[in-house]
Length: 164
Image (cartoon, rainbow, N blue to C red):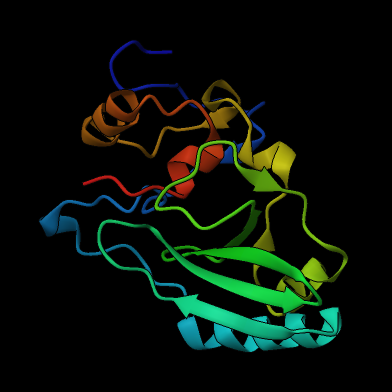
């Protein structure tokens, strides 16, 4: 750690956080990239078909959340699907929330459908990685201030947040 901003570049890091991962940006940088919501909806419907179910409520990202939330309904089960608003990352969670820290689930058997359509499906082990195992060199002092302020210690907590 360099003490001030977080972690120095680490070739042993399991995951590298790119610019825009936290949803924060400076006006002069312009907004981070956007995940295509139409592609996410297409993937949701394909996943629901693969699950023998249907798509439930889809809630588009709204400030300050960094993610879209949706559900795939199969029988009596509701599978909560999170889609990062700025990078094509998919996660599965225990329920709907405004932010997550460790409430992630393993992808269901049909989770591969998202990967087939260009998304990266993150599993519980990745999402609960401690930040010490993540390359955080793209984060600036303001982002680290938010991470510390909210007590975030995991990759999933950084990616699926609702900081303002």
